[in-house]
Image (cartoon, rainbow, N blue to C red; front, side, top):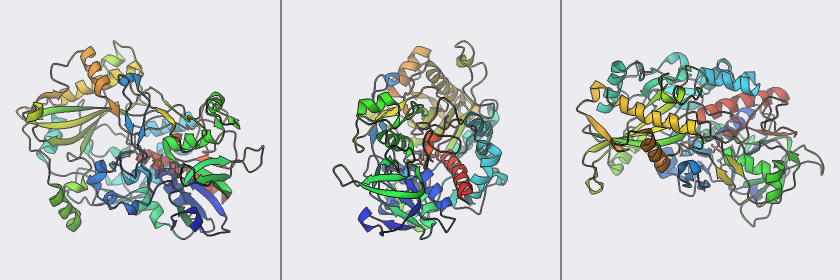
Length: 566
Ligand SMILES: Cc1cc2nc3c(=O)[nH]c(=O)nc-3n(C[C@H](O)[C@H](O)[C@H](O)COP(=O)(O)OP(=O)(O)OC[C@H]3O[C@@H](n4cnc5c(N)ncnc54)[C@H](O)[C@@H]3O)c2cc1C
């Protein structure tokens, strides 16, 4: 790709076939795939800087340091009633590669029945598991782990590609806790089975997440390897899309600016504009352009061109809780200077890991769990190959006597993967540089609370496995005496948060449906020349961290667009 730092540097007179607004996961992928047709010129407009301006993005273990910096939009939600009216920080990267330049790089695909459900609820057959899996495998470059003693038994080669662009690596690294976790799968196999490889479409059970020698992102794996027919314009925000005629609905013009008060300029696409600005940026651009719910737009002082009440609605997100348990297992703390030296010289060591205990469990709650029996909720998952809850085993922290923590603690995040609560993204004014109002609706619905609560109980059952006897002593957060429904729920309302996996704010739905923002071909309903390709089109949350599902949707979109103009 050819990089331009400002619009004034763009060569005059070029006509772009496609303009992609946002160089994140969806945007980088779709731009890369379209540019494989050498006849097409593609322009990617990214509000942030280049990922190469931040060397820290290359070091996998540095990802927690990258939020709340200049490379993040640093959003905050509105007060969340489900969280005792706390407003929560919401990280979204403002940099080339989008969140894949500063995320934890967990590679998970979701379940087979989930993808088949996407195909069913959207009317896009290309989203079926059997169609998407080959695309994900083709894009994958699977390799040897930097730290693994052995890969045998820790992945299934039948589900990994070796010839693609995105680097993924064989999981597993040695730590006594990880070995105990594996043993617990033998002791309590019904609820906590071992899962050799989540990538096979049945992600139920405990397994290792991939450490990586160096970050492989949408920018480094895809956009960074494109040729001269891709231009990338940095530090430039797409403020609106505009119709090509004064009363038309063919939106092939973007309006851009470098910041509040800057001169706004226009660039026209020959074929299409593709919005890939993510779960907040995409609905914001649509609404500022007059595509949205009329009453929302009236309140913001924006003239409605396409009245679509679904724009910015249906936002949903994984909701998480943090738990710790007292332990005498070796801590995972490390000296960062020494670790950086190791990473610099051999690309091994703690800084290749996103989480020091690089394991997760995907759990299906037992069928007799209260949410599905006494509380009468129906199963929120797409099928029995799909988990309700995730445990991310984060680290073993040192004792903290000053705060009354006398032992080391195993730190675990517990995540409800299928909340039914919905939130929204709504512009506050016609100023495109003003942040929208963001409501992620965390724990708004009673069922979401019940499932998360049972997730904490499930984690406690896991740590009661015989192998942990004498090594893990009891719950510190929440305290061991917090056991009743009421006490656990108060704990979750006081401490729960987002897992930063929002989807659905410009949801895909069947053609002619009375809900939804894009048609099955990713076109914005009621418009021409305008599509959305990013996580906002995903209608329902996957049982996965959301970047690979976003890549999957973007691969399907790329094929459809390329076929249309071939
Ligand atoms: C801290 C963190 C950790 C995460 N960890 C993981 C993980 O380990 N594994 C995983 O699978 N998922 C993870 N995720 C989620 C995953 O990264 C996202 O789901 C995914 O990046 C969404 O892709 P996207 O294309 O929708 O948006 P993004 O990747 O966010 O890209 C949107 C891009 O558009 C740009 N943009 C926005 N508005 C405009 C505008 N108006 N004009 C121009 N450009 C604009 C942004 O700057 C950004 O570059 C994590 C997310 C975060 C924040």
